[in-house]
Length: 447
Ligand code: NAD
Image (tube, rainbow, N blue to C red):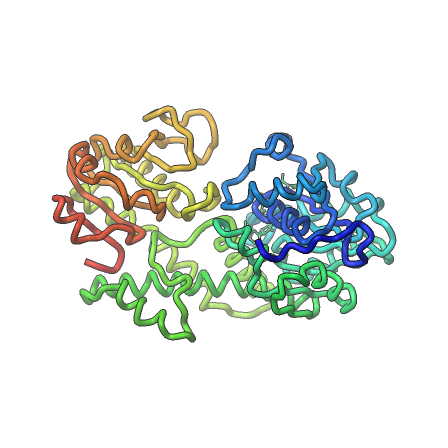
């Protein structure tokens, strides 16, 4: 963490900042702003999340977050509050980091943003800048302005691009900052909060800023759909997708990021943001068939992975035990929202498999069906380790790319399985080494 600026309270570059929502975005944002020397109050209305923070526990899994938060709490730059109304009093800037889930028609549900704006509107100091960090549809800055209803308060769009799993690094060292507002001075002020990052700053209007966020996530999703489709083609041709992607990735115009095939893309952002952008395009009368194709292709990918597991089990999973390794949408996070791994696991259970699942971030009693606890785990038998998940299984599906799965004792895995078959939906394992141990192996886009 080399960007630290030691500031005094009367430093003109030191600001009082309120952050609303201590989730995957709000928590790293608040801790980063405190690290940069600002005085931050982070408001969280979820009682458990807040209690965890107050007792020094992180409510989410994110590398380096505990240290950054502890640093802010230790210097007094970061404080927590149970209410947005308390947090915004005296603030120069208020960051909205609340959820914008997918609505029934695919559009973004703005009810959390609306509620937060209503809560704080009357309490803001004249001149306060409200910053929309939540991912919101085009026109939302004006929408928030209207809800706040204060001519002396400005609303600025500042979309967030951090990746779960590297949120701290991404917050401290963003690739770029995008700030959009009708008032260019207000936009520049928001950019100034992050000046010590040295990241390129794009100052634009709010409509463009809001479009950048959706266009960015839709591009990443489309890139992944493309990679998964190429992997499918490789299987037909007998080509090796890993070498194909190496050949593509060294081309600087393409790059290596988001070039690994998998069970389909998911997570809390890409599915909802691609659908929201498609909805925005439809409303605007633009035929974005490319994006519709990327979404349809992702559905096919999930189905393809399920079919691979069925094939590994001899054509059907009905009545079979299937081991599942990994439930989070990617490694190094505990986030299961819209996880493709979880979707594959549930589809297998719906097809009649007894699904024994292990994920390093899911606590389990051992082989117990998650009858209580989080809804998204219902119907799965949660295991305490990957060996237990493999026990008696006709196939093991590697669904999330947790590094620890590469270093297991595969002789032991072989010995506990009913039939030694592995479907590696993340191309995590070495096919030759796995086969040498006596497993049948099916990866994605490679033999
Ligand atoms: P999250 O669900 O993890 O966190 C949101 C938090 O806000 C929750 O803890 C909730 O209790 C709290 N909250 C809601 N309303 C509140 C209120 N009125 N007062 C106080 N607290 C309130 O969500 P997230 O993943 O951090 O996403 C937030 C936004 O950022 C979304 O728009 C999302 O699309 C966007 N985004 C997310 C990511 C990501 O990787 N998760 C990346 C970029 C952008």
